[in-house]
Amino acid sequence: MPPISSLPKAFVQPFLRFVFFLLSISLFAQTNLKINITDSKGESVPNVTVKGPKEQQFKLATGSSTIDLGGTKATLPDRIDHLKFIKPGWQTSSVEYFEKENELQVILEPSSSKNNPEKKTGTSESPANPEKVNLAQEEQSKSIHVKVILENGTTVSHLRLDDQHKEFVTSKNGAVTIPAARLPYIHIKGYKILRTKQPSSDLVIVVAEDTAKPNLEESIESVVNQVKIEQHQLEETNSIIILEINNILKRLAVEKTLSPYEKKKLRNYLKRLTDEVSDGDRQYEENKTKRDELLEKLNFMLLEKDSINKLNQLKIQKLEREKELERETSTKRILFVSFIAVLLSAVVLLLIFLMRKVSKQRGTLQIQNAEISEQKERIQTVYKELSDNIDSAKLIQNAILPGKALVRKAIPNIAIFYQPKNIVSGDFYWLYKRGDTTILAAVDCTGHGVAGAFMSFLGYEILNQIVRENKELQAGEILSQLNLKLIETLSIYGASGVNSGMDISLCVIDFGKSSLEFAGANNSLYVVRNGMTELEQYAADKQGIGGRQKTSHFQFKTHRVSFAPGDNFLLFTDGYADQFGGGGLNQKFMYSKLRSLFIAMAHLSPDERERMMEQQFKDWKGNYEQLDDVLLVSFTL
Image 1 (spheres, helix red, strand yellow):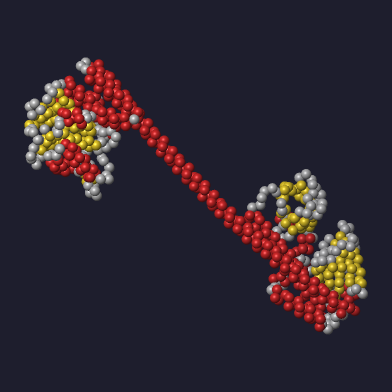
Image 2 (cartoon, rainbow, N blue to C red; image 1 turned 180 degrees about the horizontal axis):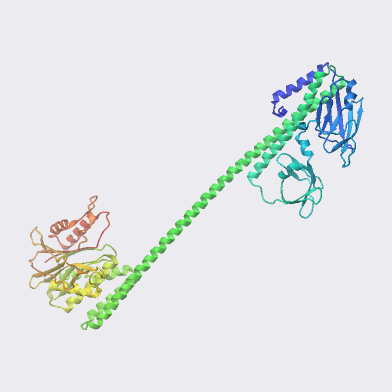
C-alpha cells in the first residue's frame, strides 16, 4: 500500500470525514483496547509489536495507543490473555487490565543475560513468520553501543550521526546505539573520523573538528540525503497510520454495535490520526519549500562559481598570450641588436683591413704630397665615423663628391641627377681639372648602401691617385690603371676572390683642342649633336673594373670624339633604366626610354634638365621600391 502522504490531499480529507460518519451511525459493536506500554520507571516504550489471536498483529510506534481486537466485550478478557508483546532486547514484566477504563497497562524490562522463564501470558517471543519482521526490528536486533570522543578524551554530546537513511543523536555522555549493519555508512557532520577502537563491548570513535569548508557538491548531497531521511520517516509514520485505519475499518466490519464511550474514544483517535497526517503533510511541504529554495540557491552559486572559473581561465589565457608576445618581442629585439652589432663589427673589421692595407702601401708609395696625406687622413676619419653612425658616412660621402659650384665652374652647362637607394650610395660622380683638361666620370660600384659606399671611397681615392701620379694618360689607360690597382687593393683574383668591383664611363675633355676621349667599363656614352634629334652611342667595353677576372691587365679602349658648341653628352649608371614602375605595368624603365628622355631634354637648361630627370623618375617609380642607386650626368660643351 502506498504511503498516505502520496495520496492526493483532496482524497485524504473526504476519506477521513467518511470514517467519522461511519463511526457516528455505526450500529455494530466494536471492542477497542487502549494500551499503555512503559518500563519499570514509568517511561514510555515505543516500537512494540503486539500479536493477538487469529494472526492479528499491531505495531505500536508510541508507548500509548489504541488497538481493535474484534469480537465483543465478553470475549475481550480472553483475547487479552492471548496478547504477546514483542520488542527485541525486551521482555514482558507485567500485564494489568482495567475494565472500567478499558485500558491495558503493560510493563516491559530489558532482557537479562540469564535464561529467565517466559511468562505464560504476554511474554516476549520471536515472531512466527520472520518475513514479517520490519527493517527497524532487524537493525535493532544487531545494534551496537557507540561512544564518540575527541582526541583529548572529551565526550561529544548532541552529535548527529548520519548513515544516509537515518540520523542518530548522541546523548550527554556522547553515547548512542546504532545498527551494526549501518556503521560503515556513518558520517558525522562537522567532524572527521580519525580512528576507531573497541577496548570493551562498546565501540569508541575518535573524531576531530573538520575545519575544511564543504564544497557546494557536498552541500547538495547533504540536502538530498536529508530529503531521503525525512521521506523515509514520513513513509514509516504513514504506514503506521494506514495500518491503524485498516484496523478500525476491520473492526467496523466485524462489530455490530459500539458504546458511546467507544465511539468517543474512536473519534478522538481518528482525529489524532487526522491531525498527524495533516501535520506531517504540512511539515513535509514546508521542508520541501525550504529545500527547493536552498537547492535553487546552491544551483545559482554553482553557476556563479563556474562563470568565475571561466573568467579566471580567460584572464590566465590572456596573461599567457601577453607573456608569449613579450617573449617574442624580446627575442626579436635581441636578434635586431645582435644583427646591428654584427654589422658594425663587420664594418670595423673592414676598416681595420683597409687601414692595414693602406699602412702597408705607405712604405712603397714614395711620392706623396701634402694633398695626398690630407686626403688619406680624411679617409681615415671617414672610416672611424662610419663605425659610429651610418649617417656620418652620408655626410662624408657628400663631402667627397664635387659640389655643384665646383662642377659648374669646370663645366658650366652640366646637370646631375643623383639619388641613392639608401642613406649612402654605391654610385658616385668624379671630376678632376688640370689646366684646360677636365676629367669627368660616372661610377657604379658593386652593391649599394654601406658596401657600395665603401667601394666608392676606394674608387674615388684610386682615381685621384692615378691622375695625380700620371699626367699624360688617355681615358682607356686610366680605366686600365683603375682596374689593376683595385684588384691589388682588394686582393681579388680567380674564383676564390670576392666579386666586388665597379662599372664606369669616363670622359677626358680638352677644352683647348675641343676634343673628348671616352672609355667605358660596361657603361656607354650617349651624344646628341646640337640641333639634331638623333642619338649617337659610343659603346663601352664588356668588362667591369675589379671583380673576378682571368687577367688583371685588361686594356680598355679609348674613343676619340670631336665636339662642337652645343653638343650634349650623357653619362649614366644602370639604376635609372632598371627601375620598376609604370603604374600597374610593373616594368623596367629600360634604356630605350632613357635615350628618348635624353633627346627630349638635350636643348633645355641645366636646372630644367635636372628637374625633368627627377620628375620622370618619380612618376615612373610611383609606389614601387627604388631598386638601386641612380646617377645621370648630362653636360653640354
